[in-house]
Length: 102
Image 1 (tube, rainbow, N blue to C red):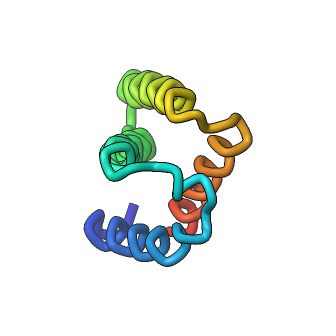
Image 2 (image 1 turned 120 degrees about the horizontal axis):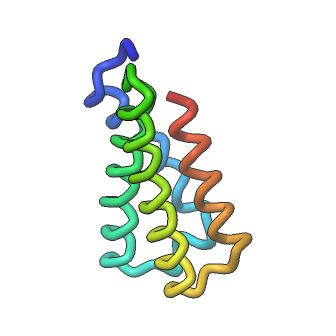
Protein backbone atom coordinates (compact mmCIF):
# COMPACT_ATOMS: atom_id res chain seq x y z
CA UNK A 1 0.00 0.00 0.00
CA UNK A 2 3.03 2.23 0.04
CA UNK A 3 2.91 3.75 3.52
CA UNK A 4 4.49 2.38 6.69
CA UNK A 5 1.79 0.99 9.02
CA UNK A 6 3.25 2.85 12.01
CA UNK A 7 3.05 6.16 10.16
CA UNK A 8 -0.53 5.48 9.10
CA UNK A 9 -1.50 4.60 12.66
CA UNK A 10 0.20 7.70 14.09
CA UNK A 11 -1.54 10.02 11.63
CA UNK A 12 -4.87 8.35 12.26
CA UNK A 13 -4.53 8.75 16.03
CA UNK A 14 -3.54 12.38 15.61
CA UNK A 15 -6.65 13.10 13.56
CA UNK A 16 -8.93 11.22 15.94
CA UNK A 17 -7.59 12.85 19.09
CA UNK A 18 -7.91 16.33 17.66
CA UNK A 19 -11.58 15.86 16.71
CA UNK A 20 -12.95 13.40 19.25
CA UNK A 21 -13.80 15.92 21.95
CA UNK A 22 -16.47 17.46 19.72
CA UNK A 23 -18.44 14.21 19.50
CA UNK A 24 -21.41 14.03 21.91
CA UNK A 25 -21.59 10.23 21.80
CA UNK A 26 -17.96 9.97 22.93
CA UNK A 27 -18.65 11.73 26.24
CA UNK A 28 -20.93 8.90 27.36
CA UNK A 29 -18.21 6.22 27.40
CA UNK A 30 -16.15 5.27 30.40
CA UNK A 31 -12.47 4.37 30.05
CA UNK A 32 -13.12 0.62 29.93
CA UNK A 33 -15.62 1.05 27.10
CA UNK A 34 -13.27 3.31 25.19
CA UNK A 35 -10.51 0.75 25.57
CA UNK A 36 -12.82 -2.05 24.34
CA UNK A 37 -13.78 -0.10 21.22
CA UNK A 38 -10.21 1.08 20.65
CA UNK A 39 -8.84 -2.48 20.67
CA UNK A 40 -11.49 -3.67 18.25
CA UNK A 41 -11.01 -0.63 16.07
CA UNK A 42 -7.35 -1.49 15.73
CA UNK A 43 -8.29 -5.05 14.83
CA UNK A 44 -10.80 -3.80 12.25
CA UNK A 45 -8.09 -1.61 10.71
CA UNK A 46 -5.77 -4.61 10.51
CA UNK A 47 -8.50 -6.66 8.84
CA UNK A 48 -9.20 -3.92 6.32
CA UNK A 49 -5.54 -3.54 5.41
CA UNK A 50 -5.17 -7.32 5.20
CA UNK A 51 -8.19 -7.49 2.92
CA UNK A 52 -6.80 -4.80 0.65
CA UNK A 53 -3.39 -6.50 0.51
CA UNK A 54 -4.72 -10.05 -0.02
CA UNK A 55 -4.05 -11.28 -3.52
CA UNK A 56 -6.26 -14.36 -3.62
CA UNK A 57 -10.03 -14.40 -3.15
CA UNK A 58 -10.09 -17.06 -0.36
CA UNK A 59 -7.78 -14.90 1.74
CA UNK A 60 -9.93 -11.85 1.13
CA UNK A 61 -13.06 -13.76 2.10
CA UNK A 62 -11.51 -14.69 5.44
CA UNK A 63 -10.74 -11.06 6.22
CA UNK A 64 -14.24 -10.06 5.21
CA UNK A 65 -15.87 -12.73 7.39
CA UNK A 66 -13.78 -11.69 10.40
CA UNK A 67 -14.66 -8.03 9.83
CA UNK A 68 -18.37 -8.88 9.59
CA UNK A 69 -18.21 -10.76 12.90
CA UNK A 70 -16.39 -7.85 14.51
CA UNK A 71 -19.00 -5.45 13.12
CA UNK A 72 -21.72 -7.49 14.83
CA UNK A 73 -19.77 -7.26 18.10
CA UNK A 74 -19.65 -3.49 17.65
CA UNK A 75 -23.41 -3.35 17.18
CA UNK A 76 -24.12 -5.41 20.28
CA UNK A 77 -21.69 -3.33 22.36
CA UNK A 78 -23.19 -0.07 21.11
CA UNK A 79 -26.67 -1.25 22.03
CA UNK A 80 -25.47 -2.36 25.49
CA UNK A 81 -24.10 1.15 26.02
CA UNK A 82 -27.46 2.69 24.99
CA UNK A 83 -26.25 4.29 21.77
CA UNK A 84 -29.06 5.03 19.38
CA UNK A 85 -28.78 3.88 15.79
CA UNK A 86 -28.05 7.49 14.82
CA UNK A 87 -25.26 7.82 17.39
CA UNK A 88 -23.72 4.49 16.39
CA UNK A 89 -23.81 5.63 12.77
CA UNK A 90 -22.20 8.95 13.70
CA UNK A 91 -19.41 7.12 15.52
CA UNK A 92 -18.85 4.80 12.56
CA UNK A 93 -18.75 7.69 10.10
CA UNK A 94 -16.44 9.69 12.36
CA UNK A 95 -13.79 6.96 12.37
CA UNK A 96 -14.38 6.01 8.73
CA UNK A 97 -13.73 9.57 7.57
CA UNK A 98 -10.47 9.79 9.47
CA UNK A 99 -9.35 6.37 8.25
CA UNK A 100 -10.11 7.25 4.64
CA UNK A 101 -8.20 10.51 5.00
CA UNK A 102 -5.07 8.41 5.27
